[in-house]
Image (cartoon, rainbow, N blue to C red):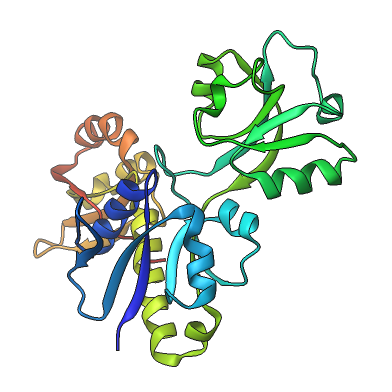
Length: 289
């Protein structure tokens, strides 16, 4: 038996493959094939656009897949959300679909767009958002380059953003957030009821979440005399309390901890000053909580 797993093709592709690598799965893609190889004989991968993933998982073409919560809501697919995986194209965080208008326009709220034209790829969700706010406007599907359409081809857009830099570059101003989204691991309802497939999906979830937990973190170990240990512990901001191990020389201990990578360059010199020796920094692939 194999788990049929959908990998998102397009903007999420590289970030997803890198996340799987950190989780312990090597996925090899080819521009000529939509069936990438994976070094797990119990998984069979297929590349699918994130926009279509939920529909194929719902229909059972795939047992599971990774896609954005935005596209699940857009398609209104009936699937089981196995896990929220907080990563995106450029960063390991959430994205927002925002209502944006030209900087020079007078539009201040969604209600100012009554009777106007809004361009977006997220058509159904945008229509529901307008209806919830009591606004009637024309929503047009955008095939791409949505940011360049106002003010000539549309009065406003609903577009996805991580940092807002592309919107600012096109002289657009964010009015409101329509939807906040993140990547999800989703399952076909029948596949989730299958004990073998469910166990396999839960294993994949555990490893992917562990890889996300380790992002931006490093391990640090050092040796220190017992009488210097309090000074060392005052310096270390640990994920939890550091692990202290007795060495063969009982006057010395080994200290193991996990730190934010960006803090290490400031902490290591202070540890050395406080009596730390044999300081070793090492990368982490997974932290399973």
